Every structure is written in C-alpha cells, then in structure tokens.
Image (cartoon, rainbow, N blue to C red; front, side, top):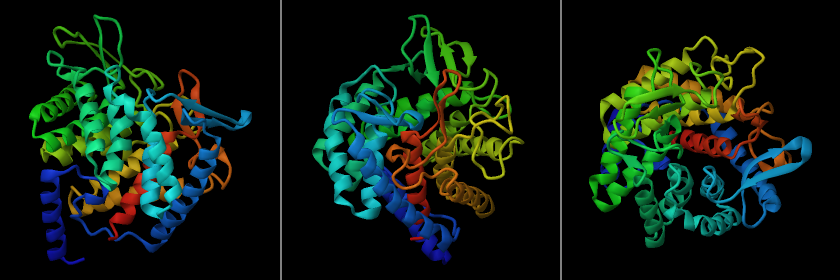
Length: 407
C-alpha cells in the first residue's frame, strides 16, 4: 500500500471521528500489515460456520431470554433476562454476522431481541449499559441509522451517567454498602457509549465523565508491573481508595486474564476517542505486560489467570484471547510500524488458534455457541470451561477487524 493512500485513509478516519462513532469498519489504517489470504479465507469460513451455529442457538433459545452459556454434560442452555450484563452480546454478534454474510434470518432475530432489550435504556442499576446497549443498539444504528435507535442509546447514556460520582471521579460498578463505592476494570468497556453520546448531542458532560473515569482507573487500578486489579473500593465521600482486590482472579494480587484484556481494550477505545497519548501509552503498557509475561502460552491463548496456581495445567480462557485479539488489531494501527506488526502478528496467531478444533466448536455442537473453553468466574465455580456469549462476540469482531485491514 502506498504512503499517499495511507495518509488519505488517515484523513478520512479523522473526519469521520469528528462527527460519528468510529466502528470497527472506520478505524484509522496507518500501518500496512498485509493480512494473509490464509486467515482471510479462515475468517470467511468462520463467519459462515458461526451463522449456522447461531441458527442452532436461535432454535434452542426461549423467546424472552438471552443466551449466556451452554453446559454440554447436561445438554443445558443457560440463559439470562435482559438486565444481565451479557444481554447485548447475542444481538451484537447476530448483527456482525449479518454484516458479513447478508443472512437476513440473523438480522430479523437481532431485531426481535432488540425489542426485548429496549426497556434497559432506563436501567440505572448497572454500569454495563455499554455492553448491553452499545454492542446491540449501537451496531444496529451503525448499520441502519434511525432516530429510534439514537433515542434508546441516548437514554442509555443518561442512565449510565447517573452512576458517576464526582468525589470519586468514577462510575460505580457494583451496588454495595453505602460506605463503599466499587469500581471494576470491566467498566472501561462501557465508556464508548458516553463518547458516542457527546458526539451525537454536543453535550460534553458524557465525554467528561468518560475521561474522568479513565483517569481515575489509570491512577488506581494498575500495579507497578502494569497488571490491573479487578476491583477498587473507594470511599464515596472522599474518593480515597479503601481496598484493592481481584474478585474473579486467582488471588487479590494476581493478574486475572480477562481483566487485563478489558483494560487493554478500554484504553485503546479511550485513546481513539480523545487522541490523548497517555491512554495509548497505558494500552501499550498493558499489552506489553500480557504479551511478554512468562506465563503467556506460545499459542497466545492465556490461562484464565496469569498466576493461576496449576500452570501449565490451568484452564485457558478463549474469551480473554478473543478480546485481546480484537484490541491488538486496533492498537496495531496507532503505533509505529514495527510495534504495529508485532501486535498484528500476535492477533493473527490468536485468531488462527481460536479457529482450530481446540477452541472452535464443530457444527451443531456446543449448544450453538461458536467458541469453547471460556472461563467466567473460577473462584465462584461458575461458567468454567464453557462457551461464553462475549467470547463469541469479540471473536467475530476480531475476525471482522482483520478482514477490514485488507480493504
């Protein structure tokens, strides 16, 4: 690709980002990273396989529920109501697959589920409205913009903003005792909804909340080695840090793999929307911790925790790998060519391995989910070594981003 063409694409990206949300199809392509025909072919095959799998999932799904996971030993599809944090991933994946395959059945199913989710725009009891509403309605609006979608998304942003505490400088994650204010690293993934709301309305309140939350997270969540705690407990009146722990990891001081991936992805998002180099630097520090860790396996599918007690026999987490691959593909476009190539190559390795029989389900199996071998909450013994709806979402998103880098 010629330098002039790269510069032109960067200018187009900049103009797009001034007025609209930047979807994965609107990323800046700064580096020429040469996606391979092997993986492009793999991606197209994976989209077709995934579309067929999701029709299997559709057939099993109760009309008023959303899929969470599948327990093969019991042949049991575990579902949730719309207020559960993962409710937006199923329609989001359907919309990604419709975009790649043109299969109208998938689109119609996504539209049906959006109607179920609609009421969550007024849900002020959760920090996960980005996951729930931006990954669903946000993708629907990106594909076919409508005033109705925009209103749902704006109401969702308003609801999310109610959880912001100026004294703490963060959005409350889990509701808890009045003297506690819990913030988890996952919350970085919900800021895109707020950035979008400012671009849509011109009201900087949402942008300011998102940036303040990112700054507070960067200051308090990270250890000297650039790994992240899962949970920070603040004093809601003074903003003082009261406790640091890792609820879903192996120990408070361990590096829970999906938490590292959430942080990586979230700070890349924040850099995209602000162009503030400190967020790009933070994202790179997280990436370097993960990719250079002595316990990162050669195939780049991480153990569920980088300090899991029984490595190398510990379970892998395909969902953490999928999130990481998607994040690295975007990060590869914001850094110099050499570092961008390294991140791109790692993402490519992850996608190849996730697409192998070890992690990708055979047609008609796995309850209709795409990926196997996710780990949800090991300490609680829930969703362990099973498919996870968000693993599917970020796997398809990563393949989509890879394909778009060839355009």
